[in-house]
View 1 (tube, rainbow, N blue to C red):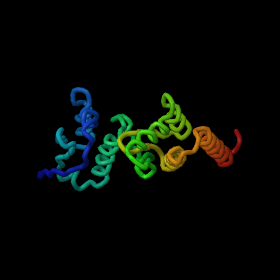
View 2: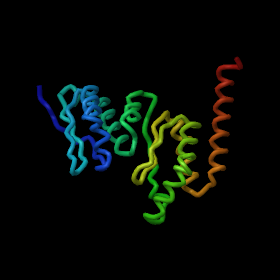
View 3: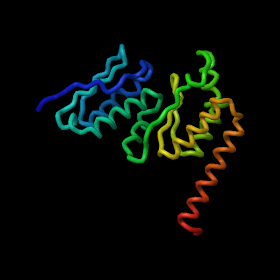
View 4: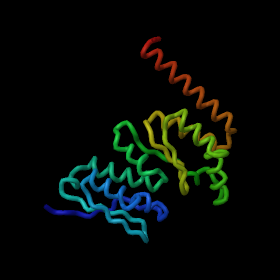
Amino acid sequence: MSEFEELIGTLPLDRVGVLIGRNGNFKRRIENLFGVKLKINSETGEVYAVLSEDVLNDYLKRENLKNIITAISLGFSGKDALKLLDDDFFIDSIDIRRYARNEKDIERLKGRVIGKRGKAWKFIEQLTGVRMAVHGYYVSFIGSISSCEIAKTAVRMLLEGKQHNTVYHYLESVRRELKEKELELWGNP
């Protein structure tokens, strides 16, 4: 059987260790899950997969592997990245540079998204059910499509300068609306 080597992603150098995991455990887990052998260039962050012909012909498996590498590169833990194997979860990002005037502004905007002691970040995750990561130039989300859209709207509001309380009220109102729709759909118990 033939083997092929494919570039499946590039990690920031500070994220290479996350893909490898303690004692190489996460890398082995990914290799076993996908039936590939990973080669990671620790100088460039490039991640190659040695693919058998079976895996090469399995588009969905290769895309799932690329999504997991992308999630790790965006700041997610390996555990969170693996949620992308569930068909109900996907990954999305906002590029903070679109809202910043300069490099210094990027750090300030990241601070707004995170909030004091992580309050804004935690609140968004709790009310939407998404997992968030803030790394490099990106705020990223893993969750259902609708949950990610709600979280993205909240983060955009913060990046545009809306007050935290305004964003919290938005999230609470959306949550109430969703609960009301759910009650309408399923009827009152």
